[in-house]
Amino acid sequence: MGINNERDIEANLQIGPTDHGMVRLFVESGSTEIPMDFTPEEADEIAEEIVAAARAARAHGSGGGRGRKRR
Image 1 (tube, rainbow, N blue to C red):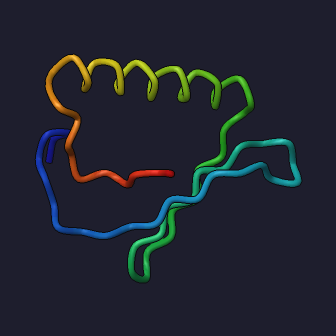
Image 2: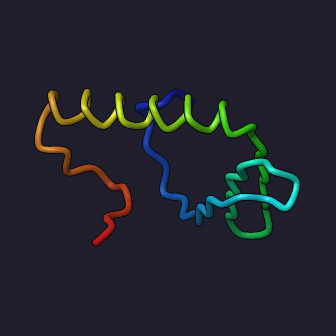
């Protein structure tokens, strides 16, 4: 499976700090839970990659994907 392959799977994503000074991305789908911990510096790098990907997606079209919209 590649990044461009779509799947009909719903998942929840939570992001926040841990009590150990890490940043946790927590993905939950059905009975599967995936906690991923990163240093603050790694989290900054991930955030930069997300922003760059959003810019690239905007350059490719309307940005009307299947992702979650925030208000």
